[in-house]
Amino acid sequence: MYQIKDLFDLDKTLASEYLSGFTYPWEALGGIKECIRALGKSLLAAEYEEIAPEIWAHKSAKIAKTASISAPCIIGEGTEIRHCAFIRGSALIGKNCVVGNSTELKNVILFDNVQVPHYNYVGDSILGYKAHMGAGSITSNVKSDKTPVVVKCGDEQMPTGLKKMGAMLGDFVEVGCNSVLNPATIVGRNSQIYPLSCVRGTVAENSIYKTGGEVVVKRK
Image (cartoon, rainbow, N blue to C red):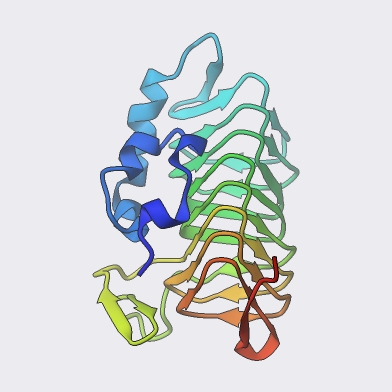
């Protein structure tokens, strides 16, 4: 069962101190809103501007006028928020990220250099350093029967008590176009998801998730 230390380089996010207080990444989902509010108040005025109440953007960030951004939100250095991006609030977006056309974010932490550039939905999720989601790929964060989410890893199961949990993507994860990451999907560092995949459970680090659910170890 992957822990925060197994998935993420905590030096690559403003939420480092916050995340270090938890063992498993989904434990952090409930406090993202308050984490952003606390961090926002501590940001340097020389670097960040509060462009609207509880919406802080680095002065180097590029934000399209057509983007919709709700509080609380932090947008990091060098990040690009593109045309018609929809940020519903409780979004901590790191440095040099791309949030693209028609991409929707809600209750998320995006580490530095994350790209969600085309038609993505990312909700109740944490995306590690340099994670990338291909066009049309989404995180599904609610089970169809609306029961609490359970994280599964092989024969091991861990109840979360959460009704909403998307995906936890480790550093350098690549998600192929039009893939669906079902509730409580965990993808280990350096792994790759083929396009058009329907993923659930845990994908080991340094793996390739192929069409039909076959998982193989990456060749070095």
